Length: 172
Image (cartoon, rainbow, N blue to C red; front, side, top):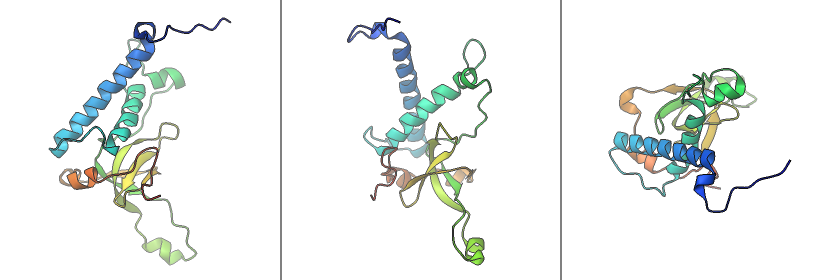
């Protein structure tokens, strides 16, 4: 095997990689413009939400577009179609928490099973939903429920998010 590298600083030599970057950038723009339309305010490019949008855009590009052979990238890779559930980026939802680990059975019964959160994507490896709680901490859950249309978008909550994919708990 003889390794071959493309010439430095020549984007024409990296066609596949360049088109992948272009596709993710197009998806990022679509998500950002859709969120700005929902909120009625401009989201700056330096906002932490943009990092979540970038990861979600890459996820969408690998899961949803159907190619000439009638299959998605995921279907070509695994042999089965992806059947996950997607919410709109930045949408308020109810996230089902993991069962509490307390000694009292009564404490388990009276605690809330769902918390209000903001949906920011899916973990590609496990299929878990990524949400950010009202307290500002990002975490993964298996189950999300949509809330009524009139309660899905809250500009103050979304613009107040500080968590990023690299720093899910901004208080630490």
